[in-house]
Length: 306
Image (cartoon, rainbow, N blue to C red; front, side):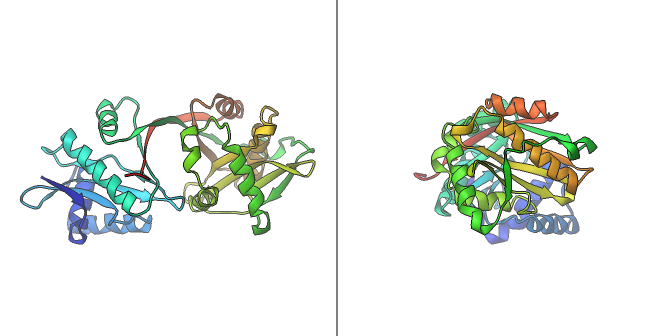
């Protein structure tokens, strides 16, 4: 068994393996071509994979990662053909993927998995990944009442523009200090790259990115992105500077965001993800009628020394 970075001629066999393992049936050539076309349309780089090759050359395992502008990436759990689904093969695949990602200049890989998937959790721990957080994925439906939310008149809401970029950066950077939302990431976050990543997560509308000012001082910001294909808006990040925490600004920012979405997309949904240990934020979202739709463990591996 050889585990290594993928070679160009192996992209179709690797894709066929992913198709078969995830869908339970081996694809014909037309189905495989459509599957590959769909992957490329979503921005998947098929070269960013690790594969396991049997002695006869067959691709019997693979894992991949999907990089973001902030030099982080989400990796898949390894997929293996029947008879090759062994822990040591999956660990080798993830370690090979880490090495490849580090060579590509990435800073971190993250993997999502189910809380009760004991096998996956054990494989991640043996592949030099550590637990980052349990994330709650939450959503709510926009209602007509959201158009009429009473907003705090003391707050001036300013839409994003290049002339305001540095103020958004400063507020987001300050919000990392003492954050309860994935605090382990604080040291590797580059705010400019992170904002680029948020902009590319969906359809970027600068009028929806809002900076909150109180007494001419930037104190918070809200960063949503629209997903028109799903008729939803994702709240990528809510930032409140430490000096103004505990004053209800997080809720006020969300209320402003809901009112703006209601004016633009009155029959849509709003989604977000939050670290379950960030109790103040979770309580805000529950108080605004968000409900949990999914829970996922997130494991991460820093690559600076990989």
